[in-house]
Image 1 (cartoon, helix red, strand yellow):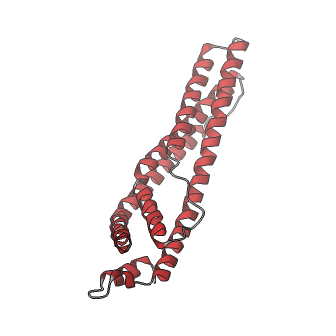
Image 2: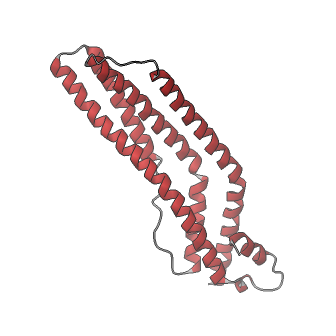
Length: 214
């Protein structure tokens, strides 16, 4: 039985006390769901950390490029473009850092009540994902635009001859992918919100019942 089936059986009880539910089965269901949630969170956090490290590294490189531009006496437009790239990289890294979410716990609790509390915190974290999704899209888009601007700055300042036929198509494609992913995830979260809110209510009821037993 999964968590929802166990909760339905618990709520269907009329005369038996709520503490008669199978604690071992409930604990196993909570642990299975938490393990799955932790795997998904690890994948998401790895992507965010990669983007954050890339954005931070590019911000440092853009800062060096400003100094190189000034030292070599290149046209001021390249210093301004490098500064704008630095600002976009910093904005992207800051947005990703702010939207990283809480660090998933690696150890399971010893008591059922503690596991229910952590599962409730996990559901609360999932319900707060909408704000972090906006920060992730903002951060990733800022880094992509900053990389495009910085690439233009370095190429033009060095008089490198490149074909720009597919450059803007590539930029438009990346922007379209970001928009599609953002809407896809937002719609998925919107559809999942009623289920998460119901799970949140059930966990609070179960936590209250376990607390009243003590």
